[in-house]
Length: 527
Image (cartoon, rainbow, N blue to C red; front, side, top):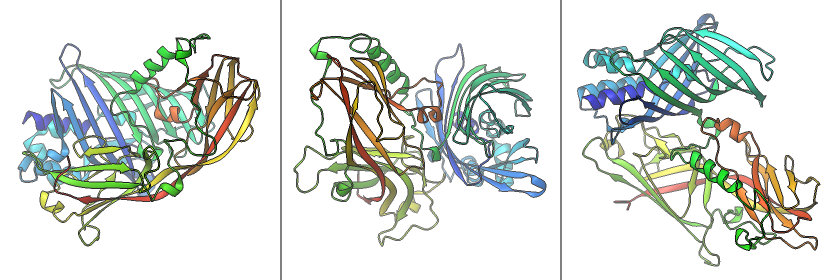
C-alpha cells in the first residue's frame, strides 16, 4: 500500500497550527523535491481550523483536513479515493473526520499534534505506523505557528524566537517588512538541527495568526527518506486570495518584464502596429463588465452530474454555459465573477440534504462562456467530507452556490491635465514618466469591500481626442511574494502613446457586489 502511505504523508504535510477565533479554511500548496531523485511530489489541500478556549489561559486548536491531493510519479491520489469499506482507509477516514488538535499553553507554546479519535488513531498506528506518524510530523507547523509579537512593531525591527517542533527546537529570526491594516508582513529565517528555511508571512497583529505564508525549506535525510527541498504556500481563504493553481504567475511576470523591456515602454516608438486606436464608448460599462440590471436576465444553463469511477465514489462534475439574454442585441454576455459564500445541497423537493456538509473552498468563482469543473480538480468550488458514499448523493437534485456577484455601472469622467492628479477617485494616481509614457495606479479591492470605484485611463492629445495607446496591466508577481502583499499594493497599468499626452480622461465605474444564487440541476451526464 505504498500509494496509501504516500497519500497519508501528503495529508500530514498539509496539516497546520495557528489561532483563529472563528473557523477558517486554509489552502495549502506543498511541493517536495529530492535532489538526485527523479520527479517532484506536490500536495494541494484545504484544512479548516477552529480555536477553543481552555482553562488557565490555554487554548485548543482543532484542525480538520477537508480534502488533499497528492500529485507525483505520474499519478494523482486524493482523499475522495478512500474506500470506507477498506479497513485501513476506514481508520484514516475516521481520523480525518475527527481531526487533530494542538493544545497551546498560556504563553503561546504549542504542544504536540494529536488525533482527536484515539481509537481510530490506534488502529491506524498499528496498521501503518510510519504513515500515521507522518500525519502529525508536519513541517507546516513551522509556517503557520502563532507569533507572539510585541506591541508597537516598526519596519526593520528584528524579533528572535525559539519554539519546539516535531523536528526539534527551531530558532526563528523575524524581520518586520511592513505594518498595515492590522497585519505585519515578516521576513523569516528558520534554523534547526535537521532543517533550514526562509520565507515570508503576513501575520494578524491582534492574535499573531499568520494569514499568508511562503516558505522554502531544506530538510536533512531522516527515517529512510532522502534529503529534500520543500516549498510551502498557505493562505486563509477569507482574505480572498488569488490561488495560482496553474503556476501561471511566474510566466505572466516574465511576459510583462519582456514587454516592458521593449518599445514603446522602454523607449518611444513611432511604429503604428504597437498601438491600438479603439477606445471604449463613454457612459456605458465595458464589454466585460456585468451591469446590475443584467444580473438576472443573463440566461445560464447550469447543470451537474455524477461521474462513476473504478476507485472511490462517483465524483461530482459541474457545468455552465453563460448566454446572452433573450434580446440577443449584444455580442455576447460578460463573464460572471463573484465571491462564493456558501453551498447548499438540496433534494428533489428543494430541501437541504441532511447530514452532508459542503464547504466552499473557492474564494472567487468565474463563469466565462462554457465552464466545467470536476471534483477531482483542486479548483472545484466546494468539498464534501472524506468517506462519503455514493448512496449519500443519490437524493441530490440541486446544488445552490450562494455568491456575491461583481457588477459595474458608469459613474462619470474626470479630465486630468498632464502632470496633475485625479480628484474624483480616492487612492488613484498617475505616474507621469514621460510625455509619451504614464503609469496609472488604483487600489485593489479589499476582502470586506462590496462597493468601490474602478477606472480606466484614456490618454488625450492637445485637441482632446483619444490617442492610440499600448497598455499593459501588471498581473504577474514574484514567486516568493505573498498574495497579501500583492493585494495591498496598487493595481498598475502602463500606457504608452505615439505622440505627447496633453491630458488623461479618467473614466470611472461604480463596482458593487450583489447577492446572487446559481442553481445547478442534476442531469444524467456532463460532457
